[in-house]
Image (tube, rainbow, N blue to C red):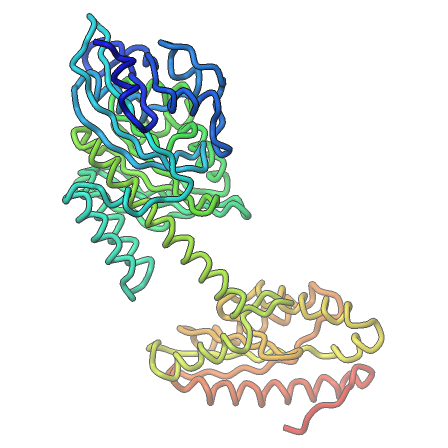
Length: 471
């Protein structure tokens, strides 16, 4: 068979790949036998977004002469050349900022233990919706269901739990997890996970700590520039063990037999990872093709969610002190008034004594420092979402599900916390009600008591006195 004539008859980039048949699910070397002019040019004159290990094409060389080893490419070649399956993939490998539209077509020409397939590819610099949509009905259905759920107006995290469970079902796996990564803070968190019935696997939360980010980030090196890592047999696991022995041991010790792991990236930002453990290896091709599209959609939604979360933080936080601002306090009070929480509520008004004197004598920088210290003292006693800067030098803590005695203890703790900061003294007023919907009257009472405490302070410390409104 004239292999050169075959590839030269194809207008797209095309080459013939040979795979050494070893037996079982193992294989030997994978070589690029020959290619058409377009394919050879992709190596010798690569696109600006593509880098090759060498720019000289030598017929019948191992593909790793040109690219880092890619288990997904190898597996597709093996399935096409040895198992005689037709495969298609539209993927965005992490090593290149391009999309590859790939087809693997078996060739009937075999030579002893060498089997052959045709590899055809197109390169897109942006994702092509038409290419993404050329998928089977089953895969299209699974991806469409994911899209519909993600567009649901329900709670985002609850929706992601449903999607995670769907992915676990699709993979017929024992476990599925979506892990978020915060590159700026170098931290990880479990967004959601799904377990099969009667599994001995435990929650990923038991493993995630302050040091786990480095472990998760090492998965990118394990993926080695591809778009995912799939281990379904000893051959695949041997590569993972070579690339990442620590992770290999941890997965095996946890009971891992098979794993498929995709990074979640969008606009060059690593958002997290999704993986399924102990999946049905017979479904590997369908799982990979489905998750290639599903993860693209998930990454886009996670990116949007993160952007909205960042915008919410900007709109709800006081930029100087980092606590919630008055607008967020008003929204929270409205929710309580409307009966969103059934239980008690306690309020502590904390106003800085002597801020005007500090501003007048030491300047606004010193005054800003005092305000930041006040917020720090409040954070020492209360959770962040309970603390609000109502305006100027006035802070409010709103605590639900608290007893009146516990509220008074909190007030005493706040006074003691203030002693740790230079020149920080609070005027404090507290109020309590066993019904949170009465929070507005509780706020008014706490405010009145705070002004009485402030008035007493200035009577005892006239040198700190400044104008106090008559309330």
